[in-house]
Length: 341
Image (tube, rainbow, N blue to C red):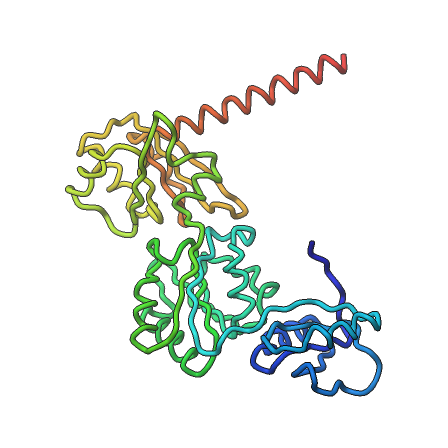
């Protein structure tokens, strides 16, 4: 169970060693508390009234239970806090498709422990002020405009970690799915920095799901292929995709949709193959456009990135399910009107 407490102006005693408690101190100060410190179980507490709350950081020192029990006996609540991680490391965090509720528990913990967060435009950056006290640095790239180059991002990460900061690189989706996470890990390894990767919910699966489209479905599709839409595919790639069957998922493919549709047709895919374009998945204004392969270019003329394309018979499955939902809703409406009569 989670409870929210107003701490503005209240005294909070953060108990734990300086290294372990440094992030907890920042969090409580950011919440408006007046923070005092207790660095060890045998250290003297500041004279004066009892604190409103004791934040006990797990720093591994023996002797804390007895000291904390004395605060409890005096009627002071004790909250458990995790220890800060070791200084000077990098964590690549997959932020999912942009919705804060799709951040993993590990992602939230890494953000809580960060000193600086370098974030992308498609990551859930709107929620960051409530998740971390870290310095927030926007290094997001838009098509044709990179305010910070990929090499520049890697340099910023490495330099911050070498200076002792706990660095989070927050990326949309998953760091290893068209996220250039491998390059960023390599940069950290070359610099001798500890680095780890926290996987995220990839938009290749989650955004179709937000539109009701399963990327696999029994007796319809037993495989799916994820393709980057940043550059046109070759004729061989069109032919291989067509030959594989199953579902094709294209990320950021609006700009190359015309070439993709034409290429798949030349490779033998039927003009009646259903295609869905899901724009702004999990964001305000999410929209799905559905047409067949022969007509999708015209149907999606007004669509824009960020978008996920789904090509395959699974689109019909979603349409059928929506039809059932619509029919059920209509039956409920009719039943309600009969009862009212």
